[in-house]
Length: 269
Image (cartoon, rainbow, N blue to C red; front, side, top):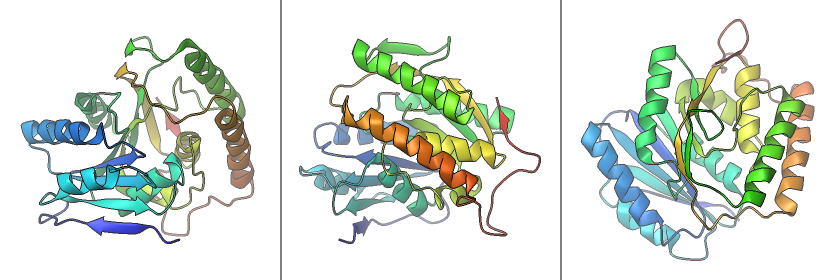
């Protein structure tokens, strides 16, 4: 089945920021989150658009998003079936038009105000990518996950660091800001549809020479995660192996003239 898209009217000129929000059965939380994002952008005078990707929801997620977007700049994208967070984020990024792109979870576990920290990091350090982190000493985790999930997340991070060489303390935080033009060639090559897409993205950013910094953020865990404790960790490990295999085979190599890579190799801050 071909996914459907619903575009809403856009203003003139390129927006400064696109906020990409993957959503699956989020009818209860989505409206409040979108209102908080809109208020934040208005207070700071940021030219922005929202791209909401409904990942095959069986509730009124699409209706809630469409009502918010009526008369606003942005679009609603609908996957005909549940494809996974990675697939939804990838589709949203490819449809975005902002100078920068912010990926955020629909529950705003990282408050939208944390965008300021990522924005400052990109500005002050000439970065291509700033990723929110719950794992740095300066991070503030105000509402924690269940201890089993938290332990599994830490174990997965150790595996990620061992398999990929990435030094990041938290690859899975759903709050990332990046330069669209630099990162678009990477998203065009990404293939991971589910939760390991964050690792695929960061692995390719570093391998292709983009500047990445991990930034401590406030985090308030929201209930209702769709991660399962048995199948998803196994699938994430399989996806990690798949990413390494594809990279070694050259399957991620950008087309000539299309790459946003910086010369001289990757830099991790």
